[in-house]
Image 1 (cartoon, rainbow, N blue to C red):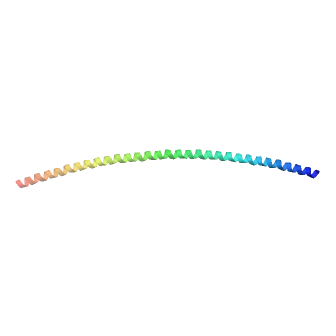
Image 2 (image 1 turned 180 degrees about the horizontal axis):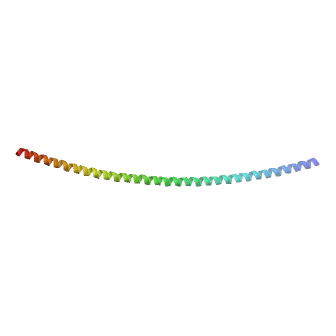
Image 3 (image 1 turned 90 degrees about the vertical axis):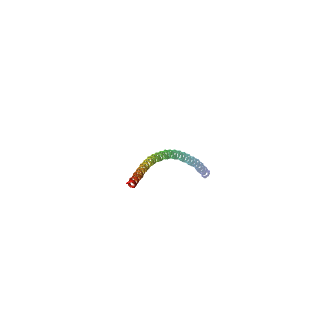
Length: 111
């Protein structure tokens, strides 16, 4: 009778509540998975942006290093040229001193 009917209604209510609960859990799960996918997309975008910045900065550093090496090479060339010029000047002075010395030796012998 009455007890069975109430028990049946309670059972139906429990089944309906279970279905509603399962639907709610599934909706929450779907929403969480969508949010995780968005976070993955955002993380991927951020990582690509960071990689792009890193590549750009590496290129800037390479250009700066190349420029500095070029400046060092130019300076080295200038210094080598000046050293050569000085060496030639010293050689001319040595030759002049030798010539003067020989001339002095000849004058002293003939005197």
